[in-house]
Amino acid sequence: MDDRLHRLYRLAKPVLAWAHLSPELVERRGGWGPGVSSLMVGAGTVGDGLSRIAEEEGAFSAAMTIALLGKGQERFFEIVRSEGEGKGLPVGAFHTPGSAGDMDLSVNLDLGKGLPLEKLGTSVLPDGQLSPSYSWIGVVPIGEGTDRVTFLCRGCPFHERCPLRRE
Image (cartoon, rainbow, N blue to C red; front, side, top):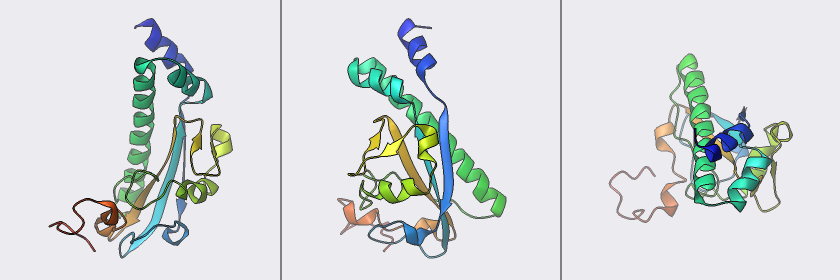
């Protein structure tokens, strides 16, 4: 294994947390869909040390750190899918505040309240950004109607002429 990759691997912290929230507790424009019974909220980080290296060193370190974050998100979605299947409920798509339609980055403030972020060594800053910077908070709707999530539609460039429009 390349020395740089080995060092990144050693610093990576396998941290992940999740919780259920009521859809009414998460502010967004548009709807979660009729019949969405709960939201599974998750968070993950690679830790402060690896975040610092990714910020200070070159593209290789940043790319490997982002790949590690993606693996954490994949694991979270596997957990959500398993819970949904266990309850016989459909599971929607994974969304992260700040990158999903009209769900503003500040939504992290509400989502973070339902998670044990301090155990992860992560916090939500007043503007909704996360610390350490190589961290994430994501949401997955669970229940009938997850295919009718509409908050993504408003920000889409095809909003007016979309053949798949769900509103």
